[in-house]
Length: 147
Image (cartoon, rainbow, N blue to C red; front, side):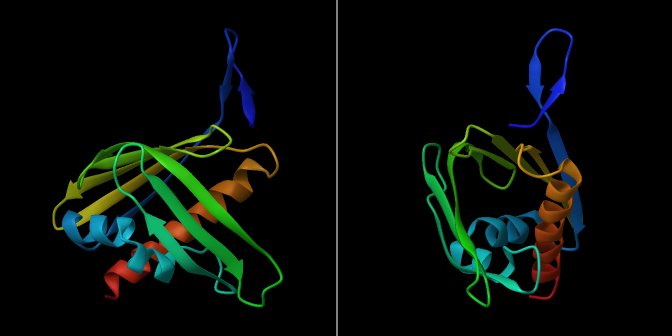
């Protein structure tokens, strides 16, 4: 984990990203949580894709997404367990390394604001992680608004 010093304890660095999407919260939720949609937007760069995704959208359920370079040179499985699911409002999950993610879906009629807060990992710079996750969220925004 990536840590910032706190005089009382070590706390993981949290990164926040967001996007305002021109769509209602029900559609945004559906496109964010349905595996048939996730495969269409869940990548940070056009040279990558998400060929498979599976979502069991309940507390204790599993999230799975296969992410790969289109040329086959690299790929990885992104997995997590849902901690909490509040339909059309928020969800949170924990990755295998213990890092946490919380996603909020705020009604800003006629738009929806999606806010993602996640614990940084220690292998890559915080800015790179923020940029990568923001790129994925931007892909999501474009996908929702164009469908």
